[in-house]
Amino acid sequence: MRWLARLLPRRTHFVGIDVGTAETKMAEIRVTNGGPEVLALRRLPSPPGVWGDVFDEEKLIGVLRELEPGTREVISCLPGDKVVSRILRLPPMSDREREQAVRLEVERFLPTPVDELIIRSVWLEDKAGGEGRRCLILAVPAALVYRYHALFSRAGLVLGVLDLPAFALHRLFQPQLQEGSVALVDIGARITQIVIMQNGQIVFLRTLSAGGDLFTRSASEHYGVTFEEAERMKLEAAATVEDPSAAEAFRGGLLEIGRELKRSLEFCSTQEGIEVRKIILSGGGAKFRPLPTFLEGMLGVPVTVDTPALTFSSLSYDPAYAVALGLALREVVV
Image (tube, rainbow, N blue to C red; front, side, top):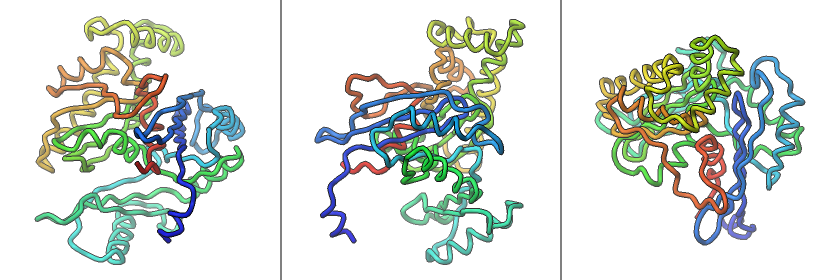
């Protein structure tokens, strides 16, 4: 069907929507002769408890409409904590044999009946090494996928693709990370996604049920104020405080995120022989200015907030939009 694709008009506008636990972010990209150009970045508060068993679906539909995507067809992603992922090494086999092996593996480590799951797998390496070929296994409740599609449809949108936050981050930064071992760490309000890449390929994934709200809780306990007041203090510190020693009130949250990152880096070192040489932060938590210096001191690895290789038109890069930008890039062909 490639001949048909050549006859159809080439798409130039793409929209990614990241429905986070605190905010719903939208990124719109246009492809020009100079490459992808970011046209719009918008965000609105997400409904409380979004993607839990019970939340206000009408509020989410209203948020999706209010974002005013530039195209009806959009790309979104499944919440990282709702997807079970595992990376295995498999011997050379056909696609059909891989499907059977993956199904057996999911039955082994998940209590949910496989008939209630959507299961996918993808090779992470072009060819097998001495210990086999890395394969990423993904399993998600089918009901959640159907719910996603239904809600976007009720908002007047067509959900073209449901992606993963990890793939979006990899897509956003991969062009400038072709060599060496790098950890991409996206810190949201309550979820942190860790993606470790080696020579441009994903070798490790982990989702933490913790994020920037840890900093807020630390300040709330330190000063004895409400969560809302502590959040305001955190946002002020994010914009003005760079010295970690001046952010003592947030130390508990900083330590917890740092410890979890350290466990992931140590696992890759001992189990895979991969030594991470750099950490790139994204997500709203990356805007907390004491964080990079604190993590560098704790982990002994350079920590940065890098700008992806995109044209931002009249806008500037905001790391909170990293996943949304990576989603919008999914169908881009330049």
